[in-house]
Every structure is written in C-alpha cells, then in structure tokens.
Length: 104
Image (cartoon, rainbow, N blue to C red; front, side, top):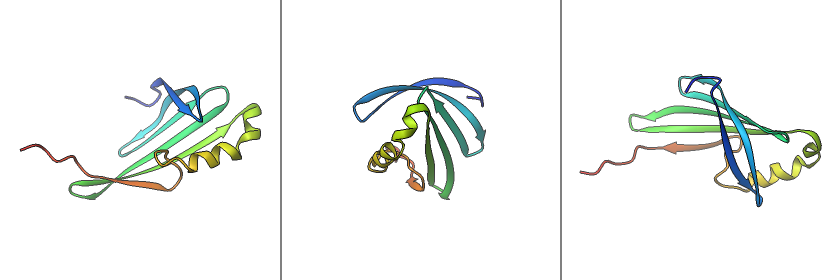
C-alpha cells in the first residue's frame, strides 16, 4: 500500500453505522498515518511501532476525531464515549505485542 491509497471502512458506534473513506496519509518505516473522513467527521490514526525486545513490539496509537458542521456541537459527548471503549485507540494508549508462538 502506498501513501494516497484509499479504501472504505464501515464502523458501528453507539448503535449507528457510519462509513469513512480512509487514505494512507504517510508511510514511514514503523509509522503509518491513516486519515478517514465523511461529511460529519475526520478521523486520524497515527501508529508507531517500536521494538521492545527481539521478540516483541510496542504499538502506540494516537487517534483523534475532528467533527464537522452540526456534529461539532456534540463533540464533547462522543469523545467521552470513546474514552470508555477499551478497544478504541485513544491518545496515549499503548499495547505491547509479542509474536504468536509457533506450533511444534
């Protein structure tokens, strides 16, 4: 995948389904940045992969939402909702990934 590549992503949040068109904004080694947009929001996912050991990687994901139009008025509410979702990448969340053990 190259910078500028686009794809559609359908997500479900608070009982609603929405589609964003995502674009690979930047693809530096270990640091991809994805930007998704539709008529009400622009979402940016900034990922950073860092080796923490010979067999493990830390993933830091900064996610931000910028609401547009009337959706701007509701900005504090959805952001609070995002912070309660454990699987959602919210600023300063990190995960440590280790490879899956291979079967003998």
